Length: 342
Image 1 (cartoon, helix red, strand yellow):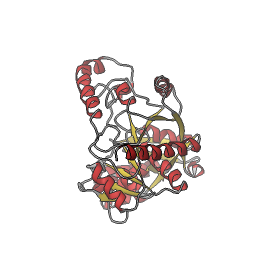
Image 2: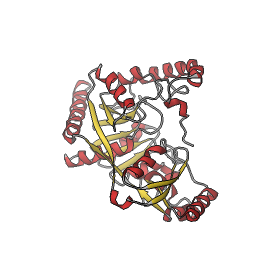
Image 3: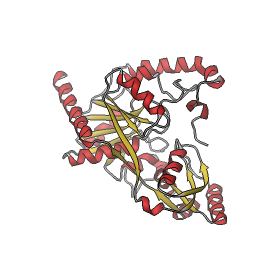
Image 4: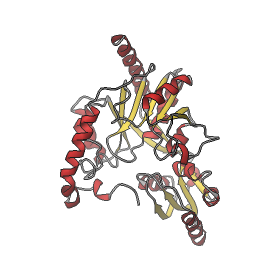
């Protein structure tokens, strides 16, 4: 099962309403935390890519796509991540040849393929380490609600299929703080995909004159999946997005197995997946995040990985020129802040 309760993304009913008093307190505390003044400022521009809700919205593919555009502009981008789920606590430069997802988290293992990546619970210390490694433009993967490091620009990612859910804060809904409180700290909103839930977010954001960017998730090498019968398994925030992506490129998803976000597969789970797929005559398929968690996690995990095909996806902006303008605006704001603060 995914971590997010289904009622978070349904019309508010008894479960959400019964938790609303607790949610109001949680949202108030979270909103006040976001109002704190940052304790540190990096000497290079910082672009934060965050989301309004708990769980997946598409931050990691967005960060990668932004980094590619930044590099094409002559910048040396690097990623700053909390390293959720990793055991390493000190600020660390991720090395995909030496580290595992258990040590640094699954998302940093993906990010490190594309640019210098640092995991650090202490974001100011992580930013310093990135600068020491030659990075001149920091992309924060998450951290929108964390006030410790000054952000020159915050781009908030919204999955159009989920939007902001039922509109309640946790635990009654998926919001990390009230939508309006968070929106006031955002510089722009990125909508991935198209749906009614996403349209509602755009409508609310447009009232505050926030720039709204559009993007889509595209499967890499889609022809490889045409007419394949698969058992698809995923431990991500919203496994249905993975299943839908497979079907969009012509795969027949005969069996679906959903696990919690950042799930670490046990030995018996690996054996069960392989045995069930073989018995049903199905090809195993999983995500890139699951790939990095399985890799070097143990003999049975490695067998499952070697028996599986990986679905790779890329984020494609509707207009890459608007992203270039966003990066230039981030640099301008960083310079303006530096001059005004000595």
